[in-house]
Image 1 (cartoon, rainbow, N blue to C red):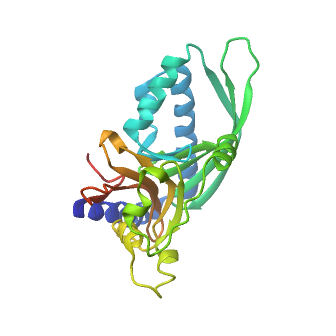
Image 2 (cartoon, rainbow, N blue to C red):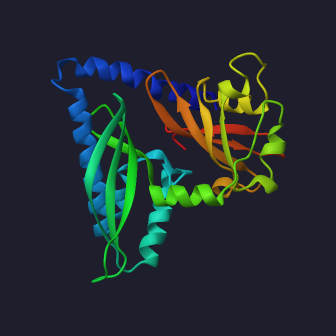
Length: 264
């Protein structure tokens, strides 16, 4: 776990500093990042239409906020494989792309995604978006993907679990809370430093960043590990933030993080 935290620190802080040094001679680093995002978007679209699962996988980061669920790249790959197996025909195209730079290393691309589930049938349009993280080498990886329709439906379907600084992790990560969403930051839980760290605040702090937060649905038997619960969120550094997965086993009391820096 200590190794994961150290690598995540390096991921969120060192690449930014190195990136600035590398970009001093660049005419327009923001434009270069934008072009990297657009290339990845095109590769993603082409890979879906050609059913090239390997190329499709290469467009994503190791952890992705995928339609409001925090998944590892292996889980994203599995979702795509099941989709292709279920649908003999599928075609899509996109247009009306709008780019919003969150900072020098992150951007959101909003676009209209037109999908056709059956040949010769009308296309259906979704207002979609993706979040990108720069790789500091002229490319960009997808760290978030969803659309407004899915977001609206999930907001209607799922309940928010109210949490506070005094609740135990066993009270939070239990059978009755599976499917509920947690929205909590470290600083909110400790009331901006006025309270001592509680159980959930301590779990968030494993990321190594006090500004990190949980913003995901509770799932059980995560990654095939019976009795292990998980919930996603973001590790927030000085300039960048990256998806992260928090896990907890009520029986063994083991708690850990899964980050984009993990080799597992």
